[in-house]
Length: 256
Image (cartoon, rainbow, N blue to C red; front, side, top):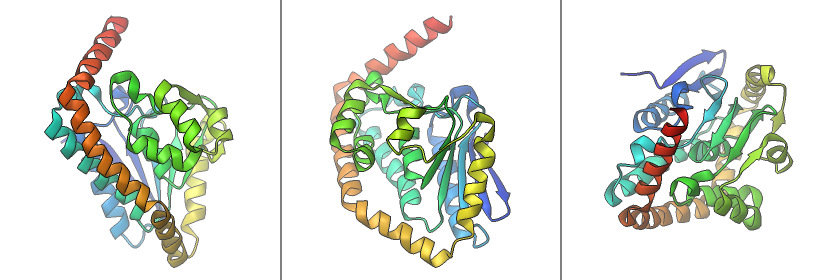
């Protein structure tokens, strides 16, 4: 089986690297499943006190959903797809250990959401972040929930309906990027931050993260419930599949 998530232990930090650089680390089911396994293993390992999440290569943390996979979904698959995301997102929300994201490029769609589920984000000036799902015919549900938690409703409406991407400076000014550093310092600074958090008292860390999850639990559950309804309706209409096919065709023609 391909190794879509690389696992490395650096002292008390477990480094996880999304490893589909030729696809800009876009999600497919095997990569998501491997990340779930890696996060569960890190949570169960008492010697791990913090997690560092990044993407392979220097172009992307993650480009979001791999459209070549989701273009084949029907309404039933869209519903089970939401359940898979809920399982992954709960590992970020309910784990006891702090998570730092090292953003080495694009963070789009569900990868943007995952970066926001991390506790802190280190990035460089070339990073772009956002929720461009509307451009490929995907309705944004979990994305609108998490953006509203960070940005409020007005900015969430802007980013959801336009699909525009934020540059690093705007994202930093919005609080979406925690530390803005030179590109060649992203990995080292993110590791330093993870090591710093790993030294904090573990019970207090667990309880603080637990409380953050409690504060946002109602919105999260609502988003996941709504996501099943909305994605079933969207995929039953055939619009997402058609838009993804069009998007992929335009991209292939441009590369050709």
